[in-house]
Amino acid sequence: MAAQCSGLVRRTLPAFALSLRTSSRLLCTAAKQKNNGQNLEDESSPNEQKTDSTSAEKTLTDEKIKLEEQLKETLEKYKRALADTENLRRRSQKLVEEAKLYGIQGFCKDLLEVADILEKATESVPKDEIKEENPHLKNLYEGLVMTEVQIQKVFKKHGLLKLNPVGAKFDPYEHEALFHTPVEGKEPGTIALVTKVGYKLHGRTLRPALVGVVKEP
Image (cartoon, rainbow, N blue to C red; front, side, top):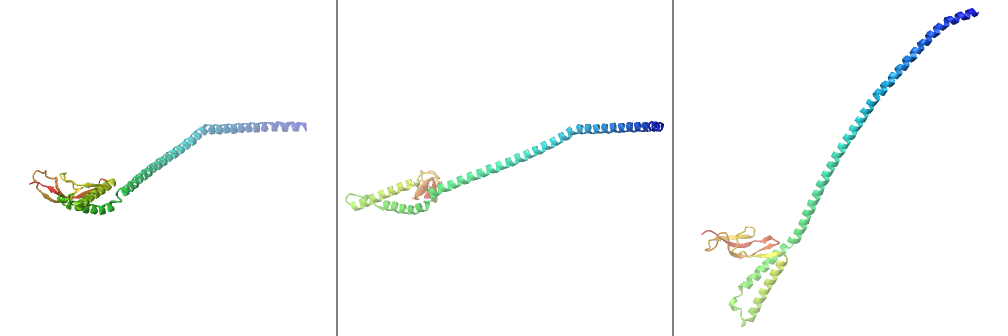
């Protein structure tokens, strides 16, 4: 019996040793493969991390550029809107100022007719009849003169100035030529006669003066 067991052991041990050696080789091979795999992972990991980091940086850079462009566009729109608002404010202010200055021009034109009549009435009084012996006519004339002076003061106060351009150069923006005639001793292009005075309201011609202009003989 012992001999049988001894023989069995002798037969079994080589096979077990062979199996053990084979398992050891397999384990070593597996360990090497595992180590090689880990080494490959360790070697590839920095590259992958670098690639991910580069991609993230590119994305952030693109986003930054996009936001900067949007900010620039928004600032340009804001500046244009601000400029448009300022121009509108200035135009509105100018219109309000012009309305204040020239809003009375219709009323002034009507008063000019009254001033013309008053001037003609003053000029029509015969000067040689204005004597102390004729007090009624004298007082009437003096009253007309005082009224004419006062109305011109009121006109001046409101920016309405009289144009009586005898001897001045003809200006089509301020004068209206009724006729041209040669006048000895007068320079051509100057005004020889004013048949009706003109008026300007705050520098703007409200009514041109009606004039006769000197021409070449």
